[in-house]
Image 1 (cartoon, one colour):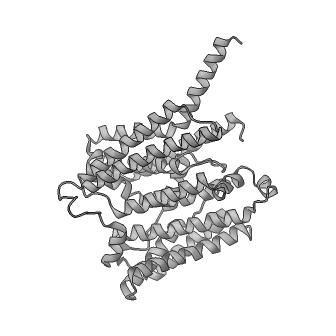
Image 2: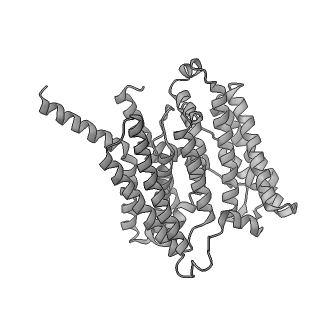
Length: 398
C-alpha cells in the first residue's frame, strides 16, 4: 500500500472515530434545531429552556446512579421509580403529620433510601440474586408500600422550608432585579472559566506524564462550544427567574459522579467488573462489593429524586415515579453506555437526558399527543442500542 493510500485510510479512520465519539452530540444538535424550527422558536424561550433541565432533573440524577449499575455488565435497577414514590410518600406524610424539621425529614428519607439500597445490594452482590429479578420484586414491593403510606390519597406538600431547599430561585439583593437576574450570568461565566481552566490543566498534566491526548484543536473547539452554550443558557435563565436551587442539586450530583467514575480507583472498578469480571476478581477486586456499591448508590439517587420530584410537583400520589426507571435507562443507553457493560460516561448521560427532554418538550410545545412521545423515545432508544451493538461487533467486543 502506497504512502498516499495509507494517509487516506488513516484520515478516514480518524474521521470515523470522531463521528462515532460525537454522534450523540450531533444528534442532540440536530434534534434541538429541528424542534426549535418546528415550534417557531418557542423551544428556546427562557422559560422553556429553564424547564428543560428542571423537568428532567430526576432523569439526570437517576441516570448517574443507573450508570454504575449498567457499567457492571449491562445490569439495571427496575425498582427506582417505585422507590421515588415510596420516599416521596414518606417525606410528604412526615411533613404533614409529624412536625419534624424539614431538614431532619430529608435526612431520614435519604437514610431509608440507603437501607433499601443496602438490602438490594446485599441480595444482588452477596446472595447472587439476578439484578433483574431482585429489582423487579422491589418495583412491586416499594410501589405497594408507597400507596399504603399514602392511603391511596394525594398528599400536598406545604412546608415552605422544604420547598425552598429544592425549588427556590436564587435572588441576590443588590445584584438581581425583577427583569434581569445578573447572578445567573455571573454563575455562567464562572462555570465557563472553570471548564476552560480544567481542560488546559488536564492537558498540561497529561503532557507532563506522557499520556496520549486528544487533538488540541478539536479539544479547544469543543471547550469553546461548551463555554458558549453555558453562557447563552445562563443569559436565558437571567431573563426568566434566574438559577433554581434544583439546578445546583443536579450539577452537584453530576460533578460528584463524573469525578468518581473518571478520577478515582473506586470508580474504575465498575468499568473493570463490566469489562471482565473474572479477570477483575483475579486482580484482587471483590465484584460483590462493586455490585453492592452500585445498587446502594442507585437507591440513594432514587431517594434524592423522590424528594426533588415531590418538591417540584408540590404533592405525591401513588403514581409518582411511574416509568422513571425507563427514562433513566434510556438516558444511559442513548448517551453511549454499552448494553454489555464496561463502557459509559456521566457526560453521555447528560447528553442522553437532554436529548430525551428536548424531544418531550418539543413535542409538547408543538401540541403532539403525549402517546407519540413514547413512540419517539422508543425509536431513539432502539437506534442507540443498535448503534452500540453494531459498533461492538465491528470492534470485536462481542
